[in-house]
Amino acid sequence: MTIYICRSLISLSLKNFSHLNKTPISLFSLLFFSSSPKSPNAVADYLIERHKFSPEIASRVSSSTNFPLKLLLKTPEKTDSILSFLQESGFSDTHLELVIKRMPQVLSANLERTIKPKFKFFQDLGFSSSDVVEVVSSHPWILTTSVDNRLRPSVLALKNVLGSNMDVPRVLKRSGLFLRYDLAKTMIPNIEFLKSCGISSSQISQHVCYYPRYFLHKPTSIREYVKRVNEMGIDGKSKMFLHAIRAISSMTRENWELKLKVFKSLGFSEDDILSVFRRQPLVFAKSERKIKAITQLFLSTGKCDISFVVNNPELLGCSVENRLKPRLRVLEVLESRNLLLKKPSLANVCKITDKKFFEKYVLPYSNEVGQLFVVNKPSMKAEICA
Figure 1 (cartoon, rainbow, N blue to C red):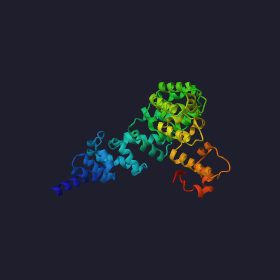
Figure 2 (tube, rainbow, N blue to C red):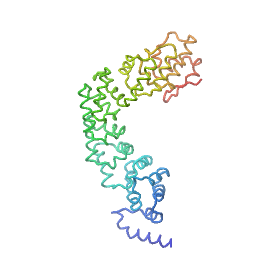
Figure 3 (cartoon, rainbow, N blue to C red):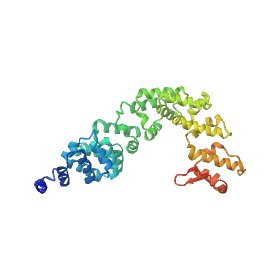
C-alpha cells in the first residue's frame, strides 16, 4: 500500500512537471505533507527537515495562534519560495529565524504582492542590501505593512527631517516605530513645536537619529513635558533642553516624585535638586538605588559633601563597581602611603577615562596598587581584585 502511494505521488509530480515554471512544487514538500499528519508537528518537522530551522523556532511557529497552519500545510511550496527569496536577498539563517520567530505569518504571505514590493521600495530609496536585511530582520512586521499607506509617508517624513536618505536606515535600525506611527500626527507636529521653543533643526535631527522614541509621544504630552522643563528653569536654547524633555518623558509623575524623595532623603535641598537637573537631567532617569549608592559612596569617603555631587552630577551616571569603587580604593592606598606629590581632584580622578587613570595612577605604582586595579584592555573596564 505504501509503495502504491509513493508511486502515485511520484506519478502526480511528473504530470505536473511541465507546470513547474509557473507554480514551483517541491517534491520533498509534496511527499512530506502527504505522508505526515496535518498537525502542528508536521509543520515543525517540515521547518526543521526542509529548512534547517532550530527545534525551538519550529515549535514556536507551529504552536503560534496567529499563524495559519492550514495554509502552510496546503501550499508548502509558497513557504519554500518565500524563504528562498529571503536567502537570495542576503538573509542569513540567524536573520531568517529572527523574522520567523517574531512574525511567523510571513511564511504564508504572498511573495509577489506582499513581500517583494517592500524590498523594491527600500532599494529604490537607496538602501543597501545589508540595510534592508537589518531593518527587516529587526522589524519583520514591515513585510506585512502597506507601502503606500504607511511605509512611504513615514520614510519621506523622516527624510525631510534628517535632510537626506543616508540617515534614514540608521534611524530605522534603531527604532522601527517610525514606520508604525502616523508621523503627520506625532513626529511632525512635535518637531514644529520644539522649533518654536528655540531648538535648532540640527539638534532635532541629531536627537531623531540617536533618541527617536520620544518624538513619537502625543503632541499634548510633549507640550506638557516642555511646560514642566520650563518651570524648572531650563531655557529652550540650552543644550540640556531636549535631554530634560527625554528625562521627564521617560517616567511617570509617580516615579518622578520617588526620585525627588530619594534626593531629599540623602540631604539634597530643593535648589540642589534643581541644579542637578539643569546640569544633567538624564541622571534622573537612573534608578533610585543607583542614585543612592553613588551619593552614599562619596559621602562615606569623608572628603566631600552633597555639594560635591551637585557640582559633578554626571558622576551619578557612572558604574559603582567598574569605575568608582576601584578608583577610590586606589586613591586611598596611594594617599595613605604618601605616594602622590600633589593631591588630585577627586572629581577629575573619577571622570577621566580608564586608560588615563591606569597610566597616571596605576602603572607608575604597580607594586603598591597593581593587585587592586586590573584593566580589561579591550573595553578598559576596571575592577577591584583584592
